[in-house]
Length: 574
Image (cartoon, rainbow, N blue to C red; front, side, top):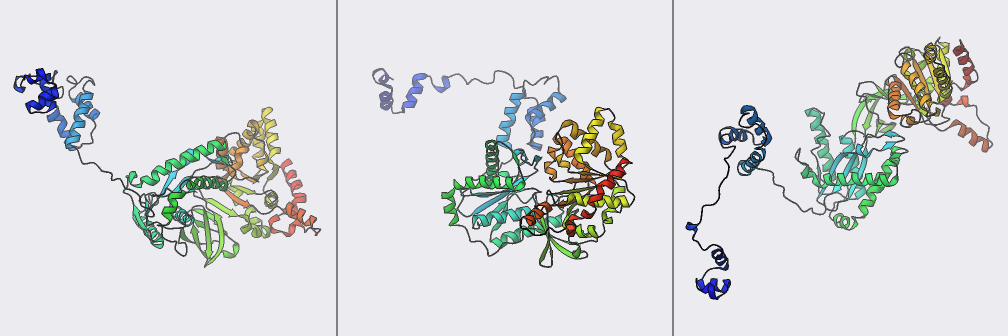
């Protein structure tokens, strides 16, 4: 002890034969451990001592997931005098946390992995409605299919309109592989849960079998992450969010989220993904060297349905009626159902292609009719639509197509046939009847004007999309549509698809309500042929004689158009 009086702490400790740390402890308190006071213990009684072991521990042992606040509420219910408030909540939470650390169930351990070039690719579907994209003013219900290489981060994205189906997965996965130019060793998905979420066991097994066969065709190992374990698909889950953020920012720079058509939106997505992939070129080159070559051909990326063409000139696929050429009546077609289209084959010969439609939630039948499939039958016997069945039930007829395609002529011919069958028909340009109804509203006789129109079995509204988007005008048009819903028929000619009808009505809610009432019981003719006026102008420029328009089946009823309007106006004046 005397060395410390003459030497430094380090030197004195060395001379005494113990460490400098021990010297510091002795300097701080030279007493022996037995001479020191006992450590300070709890200063207040344990508020949980009486209930921890007999009451709370059995509950935790039975189900460790129970929360501390649940235990506290249980104590307050069973013994409100001992636990009148939440003052012991923090103490209870710490006690439960420490118990779980020592006695709780084992937890999952995530093993970090280093991706290898060419080893794994991942696919996923992600909801993209949050981007608020519109097509010609109509909100687009959409998902994005997303393919990502785990090593390089190379990605492929595609807009999906339907659900997370096997056709959507197979078609877009093949597009990704052929765009990439190689095949990875393994393809991982989220158990394909979305693909057979609403299927029975047999159908789910069929989807799994087709998916395994798909991967075998490309020589990929098909793997799936465990349900509910999103981190096992983390490479693509993280990229999903990054992609949607990038699309959102690009839309902000663009200044508008509205696109003229679906193809423009898809091109916008493709261009953004291409720009993102250019930043990964060095890693992609390394990965490309490890990818396997593509097979000689693509494989099946659709579901097949066998359907018979009925005497009504069409066939049913998933509760949607699709038209077909009349020569195919009675034939059995093999229909390939894709995410965005259907293709029908007679044997190995393609005969019909339609954009895919989807059934309504209320079970009402949806129709997809190409007017070229029925135009000849209508010309020979317009009573197919003039028989009166659809008029008597209050159904509607809607002709949509390019300007000059013959929509007005077709509707006038049908109206003329209905007049001859004894039906009361009114033909009017939409702007004319809107102006008359608007004047009636100003004169406070709108109800009487609408009641007068109820006398007509059918009202033909020509050029509905030419109506002005004015609150007063479009509101009276909506009142006319709503009044005749399921009681009287309307026939409408429009040169714009439904997605552009927001230009006719003042707000989105009224647009949706009007379209819903019109198409609920409706036959829709899609007339997107070349304009007859343009054909005539081209023939005049080439100094060729202009053939009479009645020679074309696309201009049904043209021979009657000189006097149809006069006859119909005479009827309307009665």
